[in-house]
Image 1: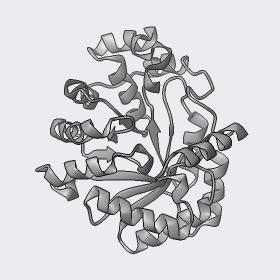
Image 2: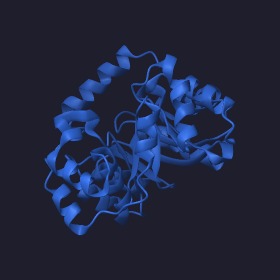
Image 3: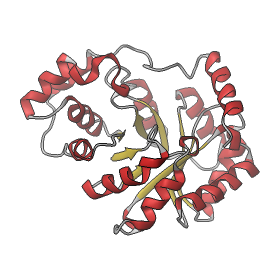
Image 4: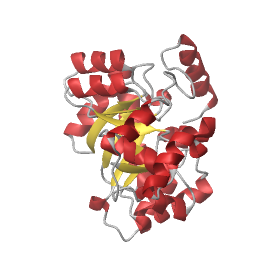
Length: 272
């Protein structure tokens, strides 16, 4: 339920960051082909004293690797990068391009045992419903932006209604936007329990049944982020957090046609 994300962690510091995260208690590590640090995650997995079967490792297929054969080949490369015989969870990173061909490859690789679970990322309710309706294997996860400013209640209800797809929150802290770490509501709630606004956010997601993927390169912050199991939020706490909803992404809207243009440009710019 608590994952350590490595998005935007430089290659030269990723291995130590992952080792630190594992040492403080994380067992769920989230990376992606487009983060360009799979190999560094793999190095950490190869040297940690924690057995592989005790760890849950996620990666994501980048758009340039969509399509049945390309996706299969890219998973083999990810297996090599991660120095593992299987990946616990593989997601389609974006809802554009040859989604169905790529997803069929993941479902076949799951049957072959190279992937334990499969899913998607950044799929809205309609795209998730479409995939579930017309694919043999249901996605087990949808990883989307979820934070106090973009709470995604409708997406949570939709995911639960369609075979209980597990939601995961990327950017649970909104990458620090809008003063989230000094927010008056979150700070006030945190003071009641001796917790930080970040811990309040992670506990809020946990109580909603949402997996949170938190990133930090500071070991003390990693330990703080995982220390959320000794308090509970009241209905009033949750009602106060609900007032922070802004009904929109803190980054960009995947439903906007401009998002397609944006990711098409990323594909051309990134050699993955």
